Length: 378
Ligand SMILES: [Mg+2]
Image 1 (cartoon, rainbow, N blue to C red):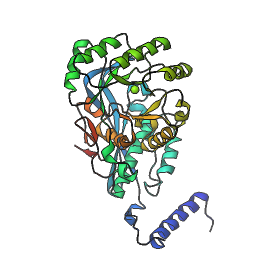
Image 2: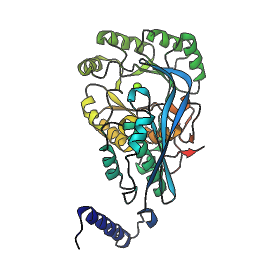
Image 3: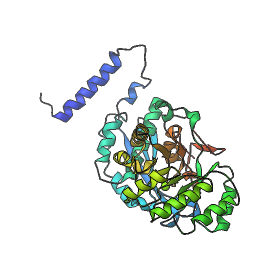
Image 4: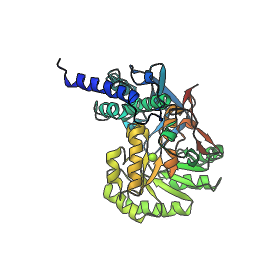
């Protein structure tokens, strides 16, 4: 009998799987995974959904009141993993582009969801971009695998769930009166994040400072253009209790960003300038640290690799988010025990969350002791 390569690999996988179960060299150690979860058919389903924001959200480049998302599910032998793609305008993805990408994904050909590396490598090669669409599959797959293993991802990764940071709470660009009001509403949060990058930066900070002396992180979203003025502004911000600044200059301005980082009195974090794993090495020396977001990184697997690489390069790490439901926020939160800063307020900014998961309690990221990503439908 002749076997093509694919058939050969498949039969080898079955034999290896069977050998694992019967000739276990460590018989006293159980994998904890029932046999029935080692083969079956995965089924991916998805639906578009629109998040309604609590406030008009204004950053340096645009304003909006809604965010399109796509909610995914992967079902396998009666267990379901949940995922999500969130598409803020600057990512360049839409309901249409995500649905079109997902229509090309065929998970039915894989033996089981534990083939994360194979599946996600092939998923990535389906199209060059679509990072949010890819993240929606990655997150659902991680949720499924965690559920099959009966463990939350922070435990699978070996992270200490008590070491989660406080999350920042974002105050969008607005009039001083509204900024003061939003600051008062954010009483529960220990760190405020302020969107900067317009000509009202000092006004925004002064409005907050008239209400509270909490630490502030600043996010310029590439909104400053002159590096000398940016450096002056960083000194002024430091004097006003700002503790870190994201993406002060446009992402293409690599040399100017490195110049600014070298002189900055505050840590400078690359966000728009650092999307995926391949960007991390180049970011060393340009920024003090990186903002990792699942919608940029294509999901949890690459995000964890980015975190490890950034750490090995001596860089700071921030775990961020888009406006998302508690599904994607929960997924990202499993990395937060290893982060210097968390910006995981995405689900707090929306009115129509459809999941319950990681919570912000007393301002602190609080992980649920539930298998997978820890998000359940509400
Ligand atoms: Mg940012």
